[in-house]
Amino acid sequence: MRYITILLTLLLTTLGIYADEPFRRVYNMEELTENAEYVIAAQGYTNPRFFVCGTGFAGIDCGTSPTEELYVPRSALIFSLIYEGQQIVLEHKEQFICTKSGKSTLEFSTHNYTPWMVTIQDGACTFRSGDKCLRINSYQTKTSLFGHYSSYSQETSLVLYKRSLALEQMQSYARLLKANTYETLILPFSTTLPDPQTKAYVVSRSGDELSYTEVTSLAANTPYIITRASTGLLRLSATDAIAPPQPNALTGTLSPLRTSNALVLNGKEFVPAAPDCLVPAFRAYLPLQP
Image 1: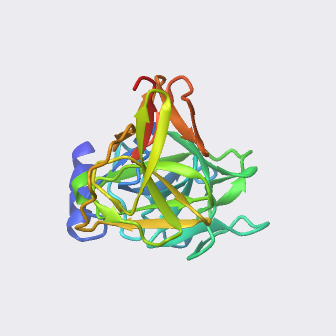
Image 2 (image 1 turned 45 degrees about the vertical axis):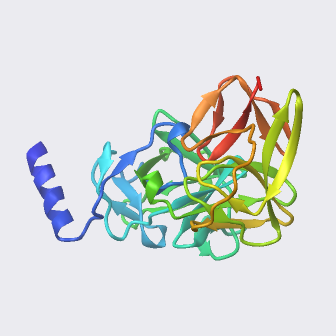
């Protein structure tokens, strides 16, 4: 039976019914990075099949249970992640997923978005907004549908799958910034700031004193502090711009890491990192010792 399943998957892939590269199951928060594509899936309860979120947020039947690797159907919705602080916004083809007030259905928007508080533990994933969650509602006789449902449900947690993009292939990056707050940023490519609303600074350190130098071009693999005068989406694209070298006290990371021995930026100031603090990819921190 195992070999039949493999042969069938290969045949469907050859016929173009499934996407070319497999997605792999996400098991913890450390795996969430912005240089990746994602699909959302869930095991139905009333209809106990395994569904991938597809066009119109309808569930696409993909078997009986979750797998470690998943060749997704062409009609599956493939998402990217955009961070807004500690929350995550889902984007599909430059449209955001958002909830409708008082309704369980989801919709796409070019300007409205819903931030989700995400937790992942041992492969069980929850996207929470307010007192509701993004989850599946499965039916025996009707199409199973992903939506914004009560957190109290017999339906199982979501299953998230990821397909990574190599850092050297990244040509763009996006983040949602709130007005007049400060965040850290490091990118694997050089870029220039898109508008006067956005400011960037390198950090130098002398003992316990920090100083900040404003820049307009960002060098690859160099950490910065960024801020915007108004709330909005910051999209940065790779350019040939070369930023001049500057003293820099920050340590950046292009992959998620955990640290307890650092200062992290919280709003407008550096504060001691919580024990085993998760620093997401494309962020930076300040070592405790100069």
